Image (cartoon, rainbow, N blue to C red; front, side, top):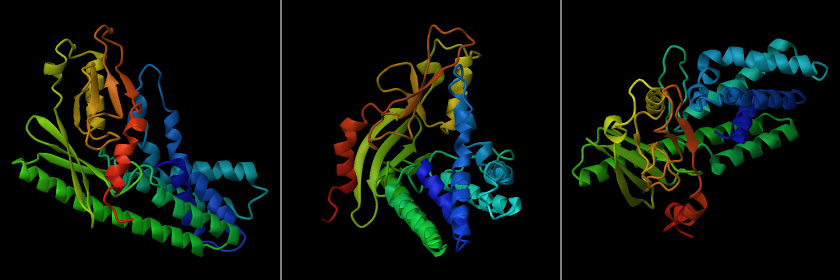
Length: 336
């Protein structure tokens, strides 16, 4: 999730264990430790733009790395500001470990995927119950943490943790309902999905993008579960077939290997770009949940040498134009 959310939730857990003067120190340690796992974004290679996809949310987010990562943060804090701490290193380490622990678990609640069990498993845990940015989740957590620090009282942080658990539970219920609606839609079309996913759209848990797979196509729709349920019929796209879609591609070239890497990351929810360019998109994502307009893709080059990598690209150029339609889908028909 975004840095503010990660830092705020990271601060809440250690703050909840403290009252009095140590409260601010506990929150500060947790805040910084809650941010630390995302330092993996520095692992980039300009020649291999897919590299960061493999390392982001990998070892720094794994459960087994919590003692190591939190010890690094604690060591840096204790070494730089030991005069300010009325605590020993082990206590600082414990506070950092509490904050560090929240990061990977919260990321796993989103749809991107987190390697919690690295190096024992390459399964990406993605529970799809909250968007990577959700103000209704973040603002109460951050606000309660700030009040707790100001009053030096961990009870406010316990309220923040309670809100976080409640909101994620609500997201889980919404996810279950969205999946049920998507299966009902597929059945109404005479389809038996081989796979089906539902993920919250940007910034909310009201509107959900659903994607299901049939023999040769992906079907993309949107649903709004709950008391004011609505269904938004979307579109469909042919599944990626590398031999058919890119007959010129050498099977042993670096670009072909990069396609396999990208497909692992995107769980084989891939298709060619709808604009006809030599791009492969991740069908799971799109700002407007009923459209095939990928937020990210890899671009191939017919003229590239065998050792040249495919290029990872992001595209948010249509977000402003699509925003009014998106907001209508989220809020249209809700009571005033």
